[in-house]
Image (cartoon, rainbow, N blue to C red; front, side, top):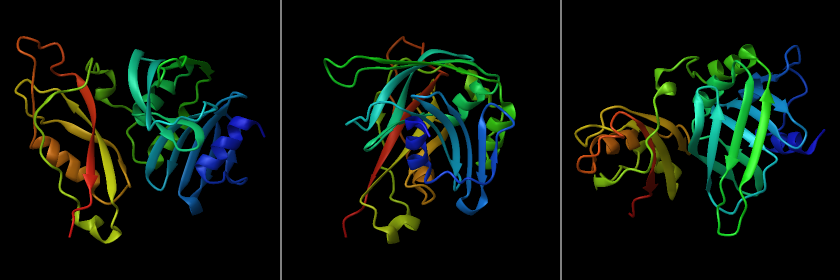
Length: 256
């Protein structure tokens, strides 16, 4: 087994030998016992995987140098996405990057074609990394992984342009630590949201991209905080109104 797939196995918590479907160019692995559905491609030095595990969806690229920072800026070209800067998450100690909008990117890959990724330098003096991967058409494998996590196979937001830069807060509401998570005593948590930049400074349309840890209500609480916050729009600049902007809401365990 090649190095990229070894890394993928470690990240996916042991790919099972049973349940693999090799009738398509993507390898499809289904393991109900682990609540795992995994569509993967092996490129030798790199592997690409769309993973649904226990209701959480990831799109993972392996075979990249391990990073000391929590996220990397990746310029993505695939399907209807053209040289778009995205914030991908790193995995501590592993040469793995996780896409910021895995369902959206996966939908761009259903028809196959070229995936072009440029990982921007994280520190001064570091060189950018470039990955050009040619993917086969495989709607069935991708769709099965998307469906396993309840992700839509089509989404009107996919074609919406992304805002050029980060937003400026006029007022940012403090998110409430979810009551359901109190017993877990998790010191730090986060949720990443995508919202449409509003014309009046107050978000009305937002969605949770991911939350960590998952399933304890941090995403729902982050949505409430976002809707109670206001954005400072530059005077006379309406270029980002209606575009999608992403940001992370942080949580800290309340002191008792």
